[in-house]
Structures are given as C-alpha cells and as structure tokens.
Length: 320
Ligand SMILES: [Zn+2]
Image 1 (spheres, rainbow, N blue to C red):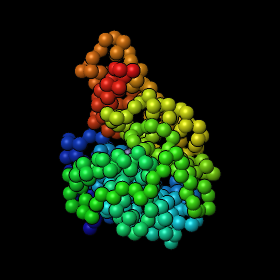
Image 2: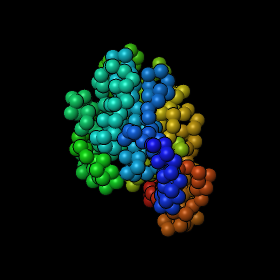
Image 3: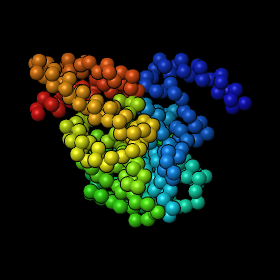
Image 4: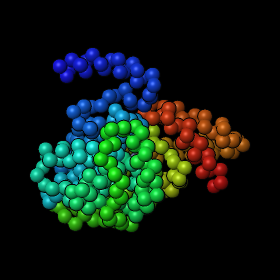
C-alpha cells in the first residue's frame, strides 16, 4: 500500500518540485518513516552519521539539511548536533537506541546555527550536558529567537516541542571528552564559516567531524559576518594539519580531505581571485554578483547562493 502510494505520488511531486525548488529538493526524503531525512549509517567502526539534504531547509526535510552524527565510545554516546527541531533530536535518539544500549552522555553543537542547536531542549529534558564553543553560545543567545521563528515558518507543526535551549557548557580552544575507549577532541581551530565553528577530532581513527569549516556536494554559504581570508587561514594553518584521512563535513557525504578542499578551500580562493580581478578592473558590486562561477555550477544550492556569495566577498574585499 505504502509503496504503491509512493510510486503514484513521486512523479507528480518531482514535476511540481522541479519547478518551484532548485538544488536537491528533487531527491525526496530518504527516510519517510522518520523525521530524519536519511537514516544514520556507520562510516567507520562506532562512528555514525545521518546525512542531511544538500538543499535549503524545508518542511519535507524537516530542516535536516546538515549532518547529524554520533560516536559510540564504549562508555556512552556522543552526539554531534541536536538538529533543527525537537523532533529531529528525538528521531536521532530512537536510532541510537536501536544500535546501542550505551546512554547518550554528551551533545556537541558544531556552531550556533539552528540545525546545530534547535533540538537541544530534547536532550536537556533528559539531563544530557550540551557543549558548544563560547562564540556559538553567544550567537544562539543573540539570534536564537529569529532562528526559531524561521524554523517554525517552514516546519509548521513539526516545530512542536522545540524551545530555545543554549548549550549547558562552553569551551574556548579545546575540550577533551572525559569518557570512552579512545580520545575524542573537540577543537576550535579558528574563524571559519560562522561564529564558534568547531571540529570533532578522533586522532586514533584519523577521522574529523569537521562541522561547517568543510563542505562539498552543495555550495557553501558566505554570510555577511564570514571572513573568507580568515577561513582560508584557519584551513591551511590548522585544519589541514590534522592530516585527517576521513572527513564528515558539515554538509555532504563523508569523504576525504582532497574532496572537501576542492569545494571549500579551493572555491574560496577561486571566488576571491575572481573578485580581486573584478576590483582591479574597477568593477562595482552590481556586476560582482555575476562573475563567472561556472566551475562550481553543478553543486547543489548553486542557484540560491552563488551570486550572494560573490556579493559578500566583494563587500569584504573592497576594503582589504
Ligand atoms: Zn551548517
């Protein structure tokens, strides 16, 4: 019955969605029986991730458009990101309980964005400590209300139960998870994509849960407050130096350094070079939006973000 219904409705939805939404909205929810967009899978032993849609947040993906990960440490579970809503945190917990009897002992928010923090109150109700960088906590404190309202606008009744809840503890440079069978380091590497971006580093496994310092498959967004030259510096001086073999990026499937370098670091350099040329030629902001970004055209969210990104880099570089 279910399959039949899906078979009948999908082609129609595809036609409608292709017209009104771009990016990978045409890849429909991969896990219809859960609020999660996709089901978590084990990337290396004991490290799982539920990969989000490489698309803007929508009712269909419940705002699960980033990666929600967890680590089974041998002495409790560490969850990275609480997701964009209470229902996502709860759905994640259901998945964890299917896989292990170990209790969830720590939540880590990879930054102060809605899809990292809005599900926090689910975990807070259970008394699980929630860790974030001090800047991410401040960002959420200042902008939480607007972030929540925006989420309610697309998630409608799926936003039910979500109440603003910041992290319960913060750190500045490094936090070492005090339990488990292998070391887990929570690192602030420096300014990157948004305030308080952190990476979770497993030195024995050489795996980094990068957070929003690293993107691929979809175009990265540059915000008004993003400093792309500092992002590149953090990348070169700190992120590369981890020598990670496996990367779970903030957005896009798990991959290696080569791939996230191409679509994060190299894209930032490309865009800055193009804008620099444009400035050298006396170009203004209006034309900056339309500089050639065709090498990145097949990335999801290209249509939503490419021109905006160019404008923001122009405004940043104008005064450099
Ligand atoms: Zn993100």
